[in-house]
Length: 169
Image 1: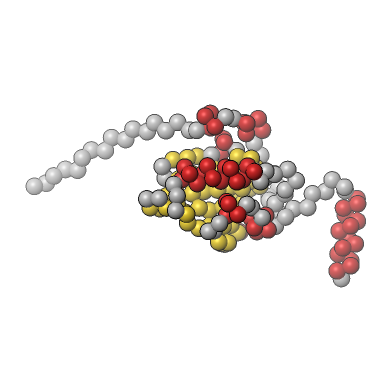
Image 2: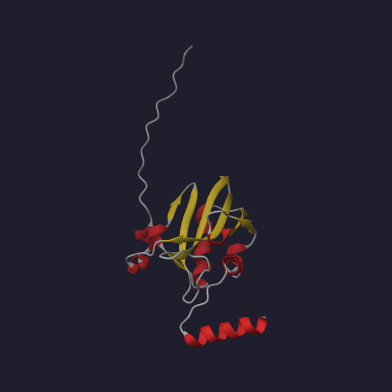
């Protein structure tokens, strides 16, 4: 039985030398740099590719954590997609294109798999981090990934006028 599977795999590879074998999302997540995944545990995630991801808490700020992730993931070949990055005092959400040659099994047709990192501040100096793969529509202009960090920061000028509470006595 195993020989038949190996033979079929060898024939498929020979027939299409450019065939790319997709890796299970859990395997690719386990191969992320430890500097990005320490203190995180595998977790069921219903909407993620492969319904799996990593989740945990860190003693840091969202800004410091995003900078740490940028360094470790870029070193591992992941490319941040600044057009899909959102940062605020509440935390951040950032997506990363996979390194060349890395295909994620379970990606729907017409979509590309991206690594999603989301962090939410849960207390002073404490952040919850979630890492998973999601399928997204391919970006039309791949050149937008090369925006400078200054261009990728969203403007946040929100003015909210909240009236003071009425006093009834």
